Image (cartoon, rainbow, N blue to C red; front, side, top):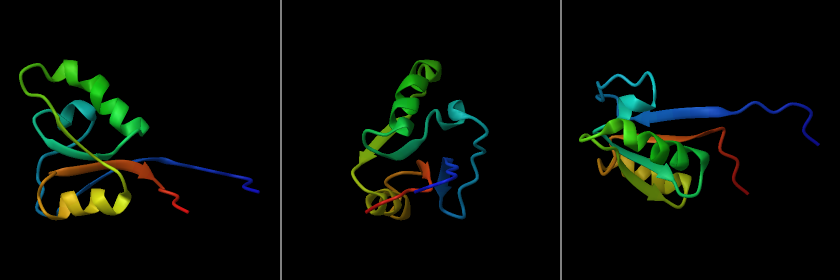
Length: 88
């Protein structure tokens, strides 16, 4: 039984990433990794219209490990995920 639960959303990026992210529209024009079928994926899709001609490239993956790997190998510039991620 969990008496208290606190969660949020975090961004992950390589240490040399210098593009400021203060809100979702700050991801316009970026390649963003996200775990498929999450609130974060939906939030990126909803943000797309405000990006106009500079859309977010959404890279949907299946697991947290996949998300970390697409950021690590440069396929995605930023990872956007739940915090904490609870996996069985």
